[in-house]
Amino acid sequence: MYLNLVYNTGLPGGSPSYADPYDYQNRLPDYKRADLGLQFVVVDDKKQFDRGWRKPFKALSFGFEIYNMFDAQNSITNTWVRDVYSKRQYAIPNYLTPRVFNVKTSMRF
Image 1 (cartoon, helix red, strand yellow):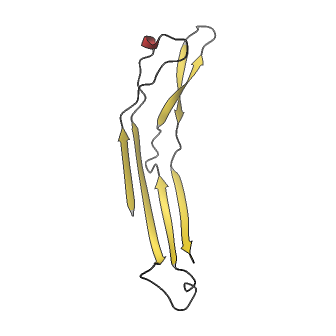
Image 2: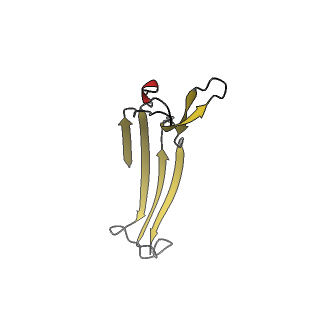
Image 3: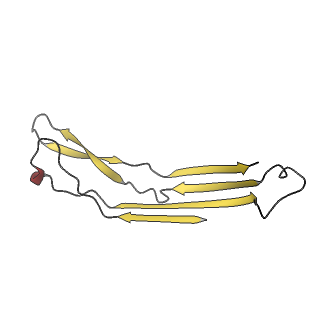
């Protein structure tokens, strides 16, 4: 089993091109993430089998992982969009992946 917890304070957001950087002094939201993984070892160096379906394997394991366990909406950059009428620019956040489930199998013969 493994548990990975990450917390980072928000980075400076930056300003769009050709704009006064002092007009756009903002920070991105804090980055929060938790990952969890579980692994079940069926065969390894210590658990060998002489007969049955597990005999050909030197190592066999199954795993289940959850990335971004709490489904936090983390953004790392902004895309700047300009309003044609007012000439103002707005920051649209680029979000990272939401919660992801992963199943894996590892075998060695």
